[in-house]
Image 1 (cartoon, rainbow, N blue to C red):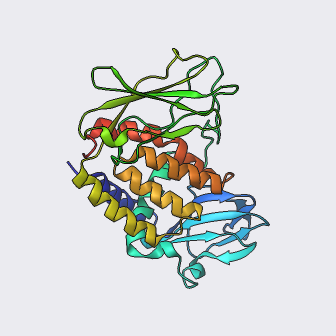
Image 2 (tube, rainbow, N blue to C red):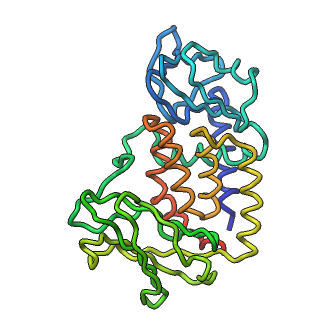
Image 3 (cartoon, one colour):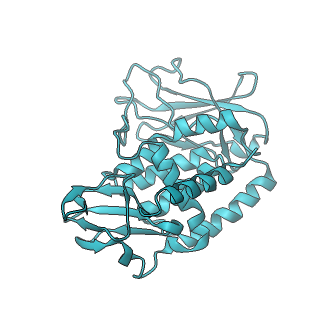
Amino acid sequence: MRSLWQVSVALIGAFSLSVYAQSVTVLATRGDVQVEQTGGTWVRASAGMKLSEQQKIKLGPQSYAALVFAGNKTRELRQPGTYVLGQLLSQRASAEDNPYAARYTGYVLNQAIASGAGRASGRTLGAVTRSTMAPAPRTPAQSAFYPEKIVFSWDRVPGSEGYILEVLDEAGNVIHSQEVPADQTSADLAVGAKLKPGPCYYWRISTRRYASLHSNNTCFRVLSSDRAAALKKEEEALRRSVDLQSALGQALLGAFYEQNGLYGYAWQAYNQAATLEPDADGYVALRDGLGQRAAQQASAAPVKE
């Protein structure tokens, strides 16, 4: 069976061939971003739009655009003005242009398209759950984690006095419980390093007020030390290659996590990208489509341990 990376490469190759004359893809936009069409007319740009390097793009005040070029090179535009797309590549190279980071740019592009970038996601940053319901998990099922850092995220419940996070073993027995303050919607698992690699553990979340009303049990796994060490080495190289203060850099980091089944970390990275550019539709789509993509991937192949 081909790996997810091989599939992603094949998709990018097919994508590139089909849009040879349209070698630029809009990954994310915010504010007044327009592209020039044949005849000199201008239309609003949207995530997923395919353009040619001969076209122009125009940004109004306080606007933003993230673009992916052939070869998976990227550019983020923040300054108002009109740009010829092809000329952007001759300007100062982006930190994400290096071959290592480019490996994940194509993956981000495909996931953004698969998530429906440019369409309403149905979820919003800082989404809430009704106070009489169990918190809704944001960390996808089948997430893999480094042994020393297991982190879960969920939707905020208004009026909550705090949360109770529980971990269960394969038999459904509660083996750990910890309280989380009301102003937090994520938590590091305090005993993560004590869990063994391999088995499917479960986590669930409830409010302190309705402690018996839990979310569904959600499976997660701990990576073996060898697998974790190999991924950490790759992650460190990527972190040195990208600007993690930018939304695009966080999206590339999220792509690394997602591609390797580290969905809990991926959600946090995509959420950070959406936080840095809260009105850019592409990053929100990446974050909010992660659960569905993870479920599809989990049904196709097991998470590496």
